[in-house]
Image (cartoon, rainbow, N blue to C red):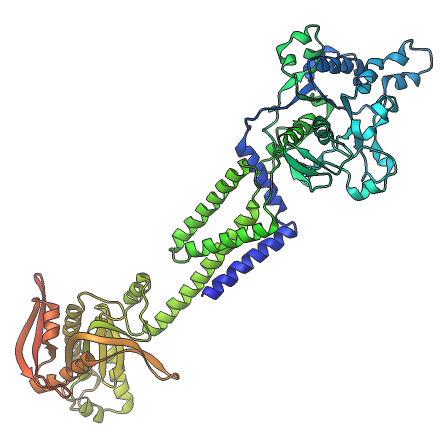
Length: 635
């Protein structure tokens, strides 16, 4: 069994690890990750990032102005942010064409002043404190894959440095349509290596964080929030601070108001990094996040793209990135978990094992949630599957093993003891030591009087018919009293009371069975007369010997054939007492030990001190004639 359990644990962990590496657990891991974010709710932390939102109210203030011509308002907003002490502003809106360039397509000279429409906006770009965004339509391996801001704006950047002033707005959308992870560099290293132009490569949040830390955007690694991050590190889970609306959002029209520089909410932006973007539903920049999903597959609570970027930027500034244990520790943890499951449920009842499984899953979720709040991501789907596989494996081994054990015990005892005794043996959880164990029992021996004379006057077939008919009747009271029919020896039967299940009243049971057996023999005498009339057969009767004492129970025999039986002096003496019944002229003869064990309820007839073959010391025996049970008497 230990080897089977160890193999079960190793197989469970290997299967779970293979399923995880094959990506077959990704769906459940995503759902569990979503659940962890939802259970966490809104996390209380000092926000270093703020959002200036182009919301429905701001759009309503300027209903006749297309978004293309909002650059003058954006310039005012950025200037006022700089005045209140905002170090950097990230514009999460892509202007691939400028108003000046668009107006020029309608004809030169038709719109006086059009050439200077974006002057203020370009001045903000020239300050280096306003960062733009670009996007990709392909892998990023070719220049044509990039959708860049208008050349009018790129030319206004300090030193025409796109990598230091333009970030990528691309979000990493997973297979189920949710945004859970981010990359510092949305374009993979292999694709970037194919480019000759100095194109943007950092995401907008990463660019803002690196610029705010005063580090080189062209480096391959940075120290952000006290943590070392690599340019091409794997995608990391976005540690969302909470559901949509968690970040402080200042409507753009508040920043454009005449009294904006005296507005407490505007002044509260001092020292923060600001993302300026669209939150209005009509501007189509909304995404599904972990707070959008439910276990039924529904979607709700869209989050604006600018707030997703704000969560990433805040995580980089805090240095709070969710970490996953290394693979070796994950495998070690699965092994320990599986071994704990095996040890805990190995000896529990089946119903308790089911409860332990459910409790284990609940504790696993609770542990995962606690570690999640501390910044660790446990592979809960893999752990839950390993726990379940170990549980089912142990339960399967137990059920099949117990079923085999039940069948073995039924095969061993089912023909010789009652079904109630078998069930009691199985329910007790104790198993007889087949190699031999000492146990106190009462042994009953019974044989048919004058069997030799009877068998001489019957044919062999009739003898077998008689024995089968008699033993069918005789076994009923013996089994009813919990007796274990050890063996049939010709016309004799050997029965133990108190084996294989110990019984405290084995002597009383044996005496009741003996009295019932005597009654059966008296009734069977009538059957003999009816079945074999005119054969001049001796009267049918039995002799019964009883003795209580210690016997040795175990498997006796050869490797070819073995049987579970009782041996010892107690068995021999019971057999000798059965043989003395005819000599003493009584039907039931019990030793003094049996009478003392049964108590004062036994009605005895004559008593003798006799010597039996094989014993030097004489023994006292009693004729049993009845057994009182309160007001009821068997006689």
